[in-house]
Image (cartoon, rainbow, N blue to C red):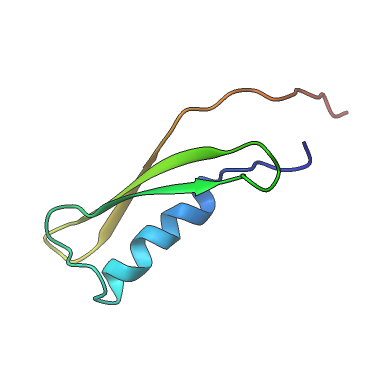
Length: 75
């Protein structure tokens, strides 16, 4: 497999963007489940939660299961 089919690096900003720009309310820690990797036949889900602190800053947490598809040692 050439790349990670499900990525927190993509879903983190995807969760924060609509809260930061007022598309989702900041109260109640909005959550969503992202699904990725179906086209490469390696589907997976990632759960993203966005929390807003009292100072207006946002915290994004990403959760999901992972497996090691391969290992390599670079020298």
